[in-house]
Image 1: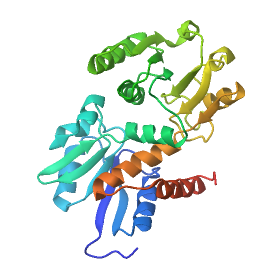
Image 2 (image 1 turned 135 degrees about the vertical axis):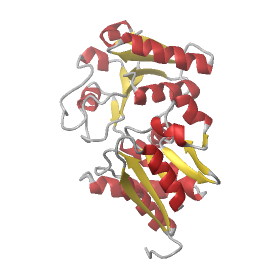
Image 3 (image 1 turned 180 degrees about the vertical axis):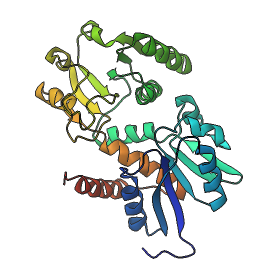
Length: 289
């Protein structure tokens, strides 16, 4: 791609950012779409988020992604926040507008599109959700909004799950999230469930860690979806597959959250063909082609 005076800049702020695959997603999309756009990571130190947002605005940067640990902190420095991001309580995408940036959350819509690409649905589904942290909280909200029948939220600290359940149930106006202690998974009614692994357990290099190891738990699972993509196959996924379930990792969620951000910045729609071409590039990058 030719870089000239009309080239637009997007990027990622967080700490750390050196490991990110986001430049590969966005620069590949720019090449495929014929856009003069470059995407680069910007490491932002503790206490410098306000400076980073103001500096990006002053420099005319088209858009930013936001990663840990700033997804909540950044909201204080935005001109406007999309209602979905406000309800979730986290922003991962900034779109430049007159007078400042508007914040969005594309993580959960990214997860939804990733699920759709695998033929999965949420409406009417019975779901087991592992975790009650930031990612799991957002997943709980997504499931409630998209019409899940019931979501059993399992967490080691029951009070945290109860807090999230009360908040999400209150926002959607129905009792869809059921908080439970992780050790009480045997009390989940018999049946087959979509299980979503929303904790950091199993993240590389701790690939042999898992929240629940009991085969009886995985006998309840028809599909396992782990938000982690490194390692490529987590122990959660291995145990799910061993029980006869399908299992997917979080790489397509990473892909589609980036695709949606790119669409917001450029006012375009990315086709499934283009998205899957980027997915193949990501797989090659991490040695899974």
